[in-house]
Length: 296
Picture (tube, rainbow, N blue to C red):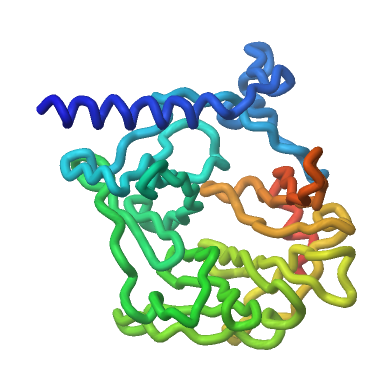
């Protein structure tokens, strides 16, 4: 009993430290006079992307997953706060002398908010919280695939990238109640370098991903393809200079309610020690910008 109490206390300290790392921006404080114009406490953008500065978090925003079967070798917390862009799950894994912390951008199925997907894993909501991580099956666990990001539609269609196969994107649908083997998307999508970070619309009307192409603005741009009447994917459309720049843009996705588009812009920098690193700034924009790109 004593060890269990100490374990819970230790975990609570870890998540408290994690929550305190996020800085608060006075510019994003909720103004009671404009509260009706806020989105989860944030003033939303228009059709011009704006930097998204997250507000501070508290330990209460995170809930321990699967507390009834706690495993100190690996455990996770699910986010329950009001930041619509926070990665929903952080995993603590015992590496011997320390705990490795990984953030998983689990994607919820818009038609079933009780399931979250990430890479080849998923978790389900239970009466006592969230389940243990479960596998999607052998077809997603191949050693020769490298899955970084997985997105899911309301129909259960999974779209994911594969960095071990020269950076391509694959799709897996549910047909007659059975999941099909993942297959490559066509050349409209799988062209260029660093093709990755896909997002499929809940209704499967469009697909967004990042890629570096000769006609692009910089190192990597966000592209979009709209679903055609015959079910095929249309030509890749660069999302334009409002979204893309000479830097690296990728990771575009909608908020769960479909109102806003979030994406990252990364720049390589050099630290005081001379080592280079990538610094990412998150942006968000009204999702109506997608309709300005749809072919008439």
